[in-house]
Image (cartoon, rainbow, N blue to C red; front, top):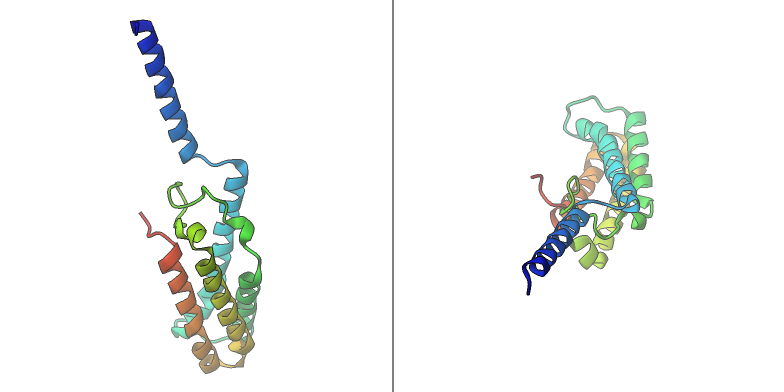
Length: 158
């Protein structure tokens, strides 16, 4: 091979590798929208868990209206079809994502976790306005559901 041909091949390979690396680290518009939507959904879970968790831990006074509203919001959030949020290529390899690849390789397991959360939040919503003791009893399964899903399908913070 001539030096010109060697150089041309080397440049082509370098651009190919650089292009692949760039593509692996950047999302399409649809991927970004899906990732933004699911992260916003998780923020809404957190927002509504906050006052309930504060009441359960006796950090803030129990308020039946606030508890019932937050629990109803959690149940509504858990019932939303999230399938469009989980676009392949938006896992933890992408900056800002903590989604483990197992969400895509173990879809049945992920869906089972989602169903557990839906049942637990529905049970919480049914009793959250009925007093602190009733809410505390129903809150445990919600926390357990969140924890088991995060353990299986969410990467740790880096």
